[in-house]
Every structure is written in C-alpha cells, then in structure tokens.
Length: 84
Image (tube, rainbow, N blue to C red; front, side):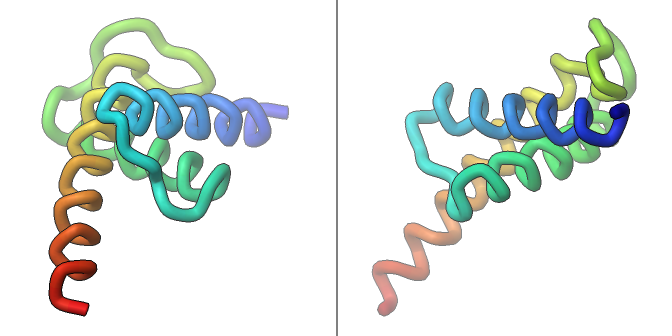
C-alpha cells in the first residue's frame, strides 16, 4: 500500500507543478508520476528535507523541484519543436 500511496502523491505533485506553470507534462499520468518522483529527488538535493511529509515525500521541496523540472523540460521541448 505504501508504494501505491507514493505513486499517487508523486502524480499529484507532478500534476500541480504542470498546473502552476500552465504547461502540460508529456506522458499524461505516467509523466506526472515521473515528474513528481524526479522533482522530489531534485527538490531534496537542492532544499533538503523540510516541511510536511506525505507518502514519503517532503511536499514543499518536492513541489519546487517538480516545478523546476517541468520548466526546464518545457524549454527543452520548445527548442526541439523550433528546430524540427
């Protein structure tokens, strides 16, 4: 049950990051989950572990990390579309 809970929280974090930036994450639900997990890892590297913990994620660093990830990913994909 803990793994499923982590998938749900990771998906919500990725979805919120895309919603805050107003950009879609490629891959739909799977993309949101991946963005949430990578964002949590990135946020914990940059900000450490602080704030409330839900499903094994420190919510604030995970959300900030996911926002950074979605922003950088959207810049890369935007550049690739211009060259194609």
